[in-house]
Length: 459
Ligand code: TYD
Ligand code: MG
Image (cartoon, rainbow, N blue to C red; front, side, top):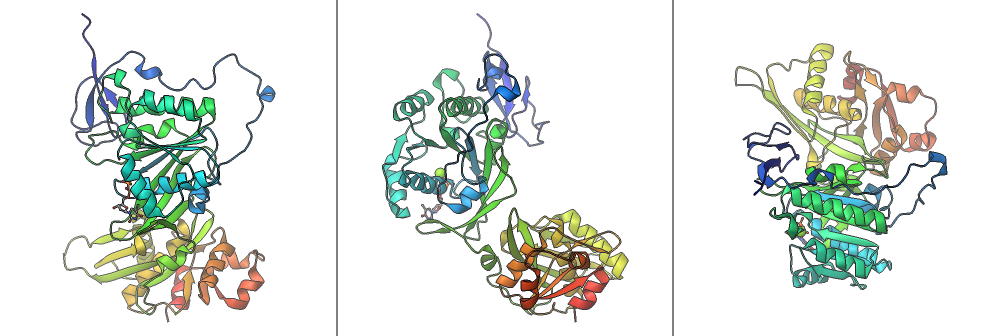
């Protein structure tokens, strides 16, 4: 008898080895390797989408640019204006964040636009799906629902129904019993994804695959599938806030820097049309250390409050520096520039700095805002009322121009801010769209250096 070979696969990143190791060399996570049977053909399971002889590029018909739109604008935008027929979209997120709710809502919306939609659930009973749909208060519109985990039975239902869209909730529950590995293992989820990919490409059906992000590594996470699918979206949120962010990580048909914002309400996910209002919600204007920046999330401007607290450091050694929602290394760099170019004594201070509301602001255009926030907290002086700050900081303390200035300024003026500190470089560039209109409503203050910004901004 031939002895079956064993291999070990990381449930986080898919790293493979023939002997068990405690720490995965691929992604450094601990105890994530799982034993699998090394079945023949395991490595050749990607979809045979092309096949046949080669063709000259100019002889190939380009694909028709067609998109399915759910009507949930926040989701359609993240997908690049709707999903492309025949694409596979992976929606990852922590358990309980609202993935099933989002995709049931999307499925019902698609169904109401006369698309044929199949919702496959391996986690809940049909009754539970029905209960959720009544909670959502949306009409059913002939949505087909299937409670099934076995791949072959799902595939045969897809064959007979011939849907336009299929939702698989979740990919970790789908199994091919002929494989011999347990449901949720790396081999199972990869096999199932490859097979769905094949169906998607051959029949032009769009698949949404839900994938749970797992901490304990017992089941394979969505990361092991990212390279196999066309789009990867992550649904994130904060346990302490009711808003949820849908973020594009990979998109073969659009940009990846868009994000969609929702709030979780008793009757499902609600789109947030004015996110700036949400993030500035409880702001107390005249507090030292609190400032507002105008940041771009993809094509959309967003106003976010940044707060700092600067206190004497009593620890003696290295002072504490913590930041939430901001790039820690950039904050360190800004602190160094404040010390060296403005002469602010920060080496014996603890600095705590947060982007409020649980958002992450990573782009360089918020640097001037971060610096002003720290300076305002350090001097215990608030930044002038109704001010928005944009600008990138260079190592010599100069304020560098930023892109998309008119969108950023317009969002500020739309939200009632009357004054904007912006790079002199942007102001010197004679023209940006809508400038005359803006200048009527907003006082534009150009600054060339950080030092000058502090003089103008902190009275
Ligand atoms: P769910 O979509 O089941 O999360 P996931 O599929 O990502 O595991 O949603 C989980 C939470 O959302 C659950 O705690 C209840 C809450 N929820 C609402 O607040 N409002 C609603 O209308 C629904 C359907 C769920
Ligand atoms: Mg779910």
